[in-house]
Each structure stands twice: as structure tokens, then as C-alpha cells.
Image (tube, rainbow, N blue to C red; front, side):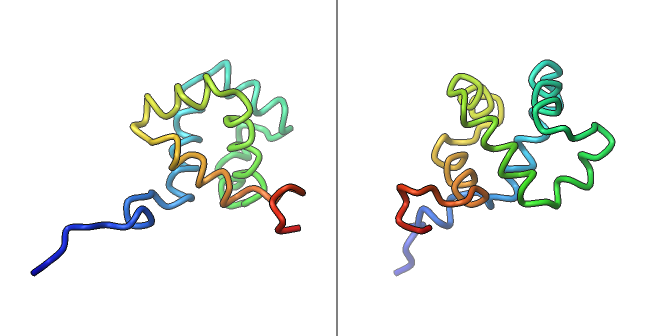
Length: 102
């Protein structure tokens, strides 16, 4: 008998896919995107190359996760679960001192 059970790992999106979805969403939110670029110092023309930099992705996800209403707006607009967004954030972010992974 075949099982239809899927682990949460199988159901979760790839962190890179989630980060790209965040970038696409931010690009369609001019005020947020401008603020994010201003905070990072990245020029709009540099974004295409920056997407390959894990540090840029970590910063972008940090930007989103620091404001819950913005994070929830992304989740609602993209159909991404908060758990998937959080998993992508943890994937790209350095462990904190409270994680025991330093």
C-alpha cells in the first residue's frame, strides 16, 4: 500500500525559491523596495547580480522579517506560509548567539 504522507521538508519550498519570490514581491512594492535598497546601498542595476549573493538574500529576508505586517503581506500575496518564509530566513541568516550554533 502506498502512503500519501509527505514530510514537512517535502512540502516546504526551497529557500532560494522563497528568496526570489520575496525579491519579486518587493520589486512590485516601490516604497518598500526603495527603502530596502536605500538601507543596503545596493543600486537597482546591481540587484540582478546580488540575487546570487547569500548575504544579500539574508539581508533581504531580515528586512522583511523585521516587520511582521510586511512579512504577513508577502505571505498573503504570494501564498507562502509564514513557516516557509521563516525557514528561508533561518537558512540564509547567520546563527545568533542564542542559537547555540556560534
